[in-house]
Length: 113
Image (tube, rainbow, N blue to C red; front, side):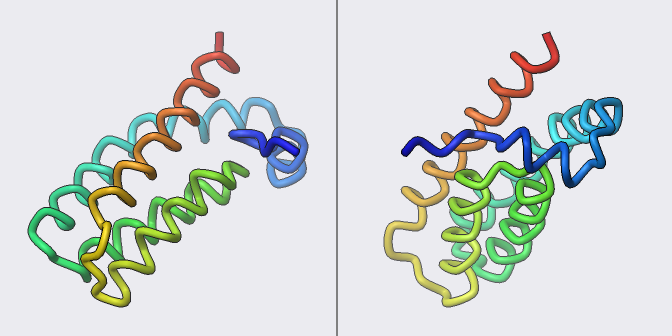
């Protein structure tokens, strides 16, 4: 079974079927995402595990609110690496998170078109 980038049924339930609110949340994600992923990448490069943990946690919450579970799971993996101060494969985990978030961005672009 393939997991959707964004579970639209779940998102509609979260947003009480308010399509305008969904569009606003998508727009806000597109504005906030570059800063959050930038913070994660900067913190990871500096081995600032607290920064990785905090920024990944914020991004995870946003992604869960958007019902973007695959990307939220990737953010959770990065968050855990920060929380446990685990540098093993951190760059790869951040790259995976970035790839999942790019899928979310493409979904939003298609949805909004």
